[in-house]
Image 1: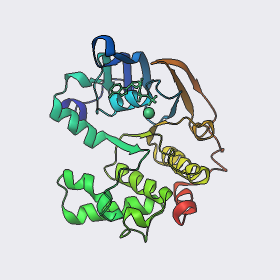
Image 2: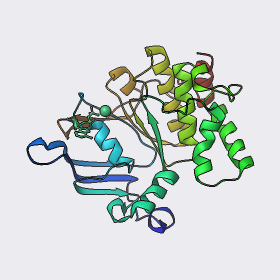
Image 3: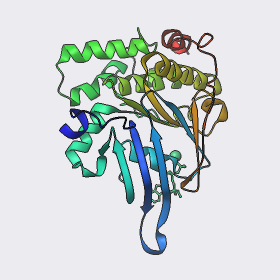
Image 4: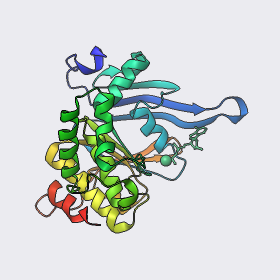
Length: 261
Ligand code: ADP
Ligand code: MG
C-alpha cells in the first residue's frame, strides 16, 4: 500500500482521474455496457454532483471510484497511483484510509448504537478503544448528534440516521466522501439539511465530496455538475454553489439545525 498512501504524490496529479473507463456487466448477448468511456478528473477540495437518468451508470462509476468495483477497460488513478496495479489488500487499504462512503439506505447496523456504528471503521483498523471512542464522539458531535450516541438506528429519524452514516464515513478522516443518492430516502427538508452539512464540510474542512443525485435542488449545493447519459459524460460544468459563504450555515449550525429532526 506504500504506493497510494506514503509515497509523495505525482506533481499536480488530481485526487481522482478516470481515463477511458468502461464497465461491461455480463457477457455475450446479455452484456450491458454500463460505462462507455469515462474521462474525469477531480481535484482535492472539489464538491461535485453527478446527475443523470436512472441506469446511466452513476452508481457503477461511484463503485469504481470507491474501489468496490474495477473497470473492464481504462484507467483509474488515485493521487497519481494507478489503482489497477494494486492488489486486493492494497485496494482495501486505500479504501479504508482514503475513501468514505454514504449510501441512500444509510447501511447502519440495526442493533448497534450510533456510537458503536461510528466506531466500527476504527475497530477494523485496530485502533485502541479509548481512541475509537473519542474519535466517534467527536464525529457525532460534528454532525449535530451529540447526546444521541446511545440511540439505535430505529430510534433516530431518517435524517439523523444519515448523519450517523456521514459521521461513520468521516471518522477515519478520508480524503474524499463518496455519496450515492444520500438524500434519496429523505423528505425535502431533511435532504436540504444533509446537503447543507456536506457543503459546510467541503467549505470548512476542504473535504472533497462527490455525490450522486437526480434532484436539481440538491445538486445546486455543489460547485460542479457532471451529467451522465447512457454510460458517457454528457456535460461537465462549474456553477456557483447555492448559498453564498456569508449566508450559508457553518457545519456546526447546519448540523444543529437538523439535530432534532
Ligand atoms: P444508475 O446508478 O445511473 O441508475 P447503474 O450504474 O446502477 O445506473 O447501472 C447502469 C447500467 O448497468 C444499468 O443498465 C443497469 O441495469 C446495469 N447494471 C448495474 N449493475 C449491474 C449488475 N451488477 N449486473 C448487470 N447489470 C448491471
Ligand atoms: Mg444508482
